[in-house]
Length: 372
Image (cartoon, rainbow, N blue to C red):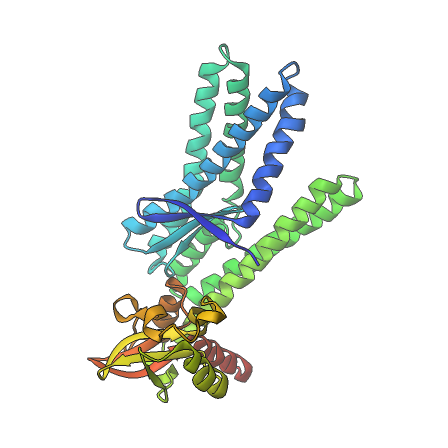
């Protein structure tokens, strides 16, 4: 299972690193220290190759973070929500809370990414000119970063969704047709075509005895293809949910429990017998919180008899709630945004139902199977 860790925050945006980032960071550092710099700059001490290699790798990923941060800041300036930025094996990704509301917003958010990489490349190139006669290691470092950021900027201009160039293409088609779904389908198909070319080129390199480069190209092609197909499916999914409200998806037959209920009794009489995973907790007729199977699993078995529901539940003030008239897309966004699997549906002060992520996914599956 892939894991990500939060390493800090910038402008209110959580910065995370995916577990795969550790692999690529180690690999890039090793490649620079063992091959790239030694073949171009002989005579450095071994420690210096590794020091420059690690620093270059860190600054490279800082540049990737800058690229994604630019996307995020433009999105926030336009009123879009940004959950986080995650660095992973193929670079980085900014996770927005929803699709851009207009083609112009999509265009500006997408185009600013490659532009930022080209500006970063120009910055490092100027620094490399200034330090060339004073420090060969610094010149080597900044020249490499200038080249890599230029490549990132140009690569992201390729008109294949979900790359920035593909998003620019989608924005242009969206502006022309007025149809987000159709423009995403076209941009996604273009992205898959680009991915196919990467894979074919990778296979060619493999047969040309460039095994590593070929495998890397095939991997990039596979990733682009998967992301392009997934991006279109997400738009289709949101389109299917926009005319459905929370009251259509929620479960009206929900069971409530007391905050004073022992955990042992909750497990034996409710979870095991009734095979439910989430329960609303009420106190004096009012919603007090929610408890789910994940909350129970973190409590050691020897403490089940002494632990009460109220001690481990998510309290009312920390709950994400939805209203009966909320559309399915906003409901799914709330579930995903807080990474929760169930939310109470509230009308005024009254709880009218409970809505689980599985209810939304089951609805989508049924519509897909019926071809609706």
